Length: 114
Length: 110
Image 1 (tube, each protein chain N blue to C red):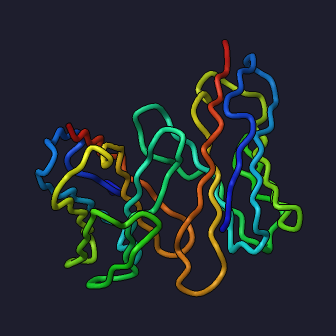
Image 2: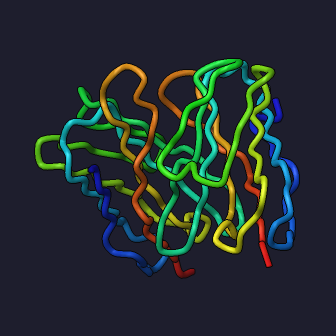
Image 3: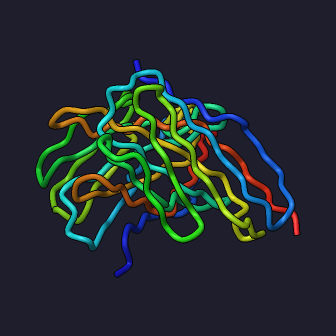
């Protein structure tokens, strides 16, 4: 059974710092990996999706990398801002037609201190 | 576009009561999903649908039923609510890879 782990569970950094959030998964046979952001009391917002054949994806100050063979993904946030404070979740999708079930990590709660 | 919407936003039920949660999407997505989010457990898939008129079980389907009579709507039903169903419920939809989530329904069963 696929398991997704995110360490640390919480992270606090001063504004302006670059930071890395980690996601690891036990079964390297994945179709894709998705990073989400969740603000308190809100739904999930998709940030980046990386297909299994890709190594990284970038959107603005965010860069996500994928090393499928080692079962790891990182989300790099450049020049962090207080507005980046949220919980960040990663999720993996298994391969195969008809496989829609995402397995989520429990998230990393990020606080960016002004 | 409104994206994915959920009704209601909050609800308190007594044990044994029934209710239906409504999810609607205006993106013409084929696939729709119901998740629950619990502290320390993360998000878990309850049921999903790959198209109008079709549904399938996810990781934690017991105690829930679903229906997809129209492509844009996905209903989640609780026939006899239990305190263990206290949770935040999220609906999501996708065309293929990327899932888009609704704002959630906070349900408390007393």
